[in-house]
Length: 334
Image (cartoon, one colour):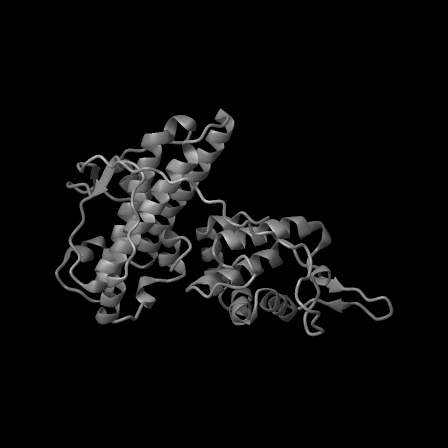
């Protein structure tokens, strides 16, 4: 579904936009593939039981995302390397999860989302949203606690209690009965499988499809001094599941809007030339259509994000800014 569920549920694949029926959610639940923890956690969540198929589906989705993040953190920080490198890795994870807390807090505030609504028996679109976002919030808090309780000695970042997370990030009194609690389950013994050596995606600094007179060439569009960095960013698109190893766009929900934001961010940070120069003709200014046509050809026709790109440049600038702020990888493009 998503590349970063903690952010995508807020800005890319919002719960309020999901119009699937209860029967459709029931079918999705049948084929749901569960993730497994790679070690015993320190915390667990005590949350109101889900009764509708929609709520059950999103709870499983969020639980899986927590487990993937939990396992990733352990894999990233339980390595033999220099103290400086470990400190860098810890700060990176710390800032990423802190961003989750800030973005969820902003979403709750911006949408006047009363968490008490998630506890009421009534079930409608608003209560479903409150229920699912409350569970997302609890998982982000739990992930933060797992990170700092396991690895805080690696860095100098602020340490918080669960109660302080409620106060500092969500401006609320901690509930009398905490949702994030000490883990009470059985010890988890999981043998970590060795990582497979997958075929590495190799970014190409140049054109690789047949020449197309309607599309600018790589050198005509991409600023020469930025081409090395652009190749690294294409590797990031592959890592994020937006393009595959063959340079074709992956048609997952939310990918097109992320690709459009990526193109706008590159426009802002001067990755594209301003003009095309010819030997015997006047130079030609590069327009937005040249940019989205280039990417649609480079990543295949299903990647055409021209409409989304134009909206982000025009009427939906604020939506674009919020999307960038919420996605650390986009925000770091310089």
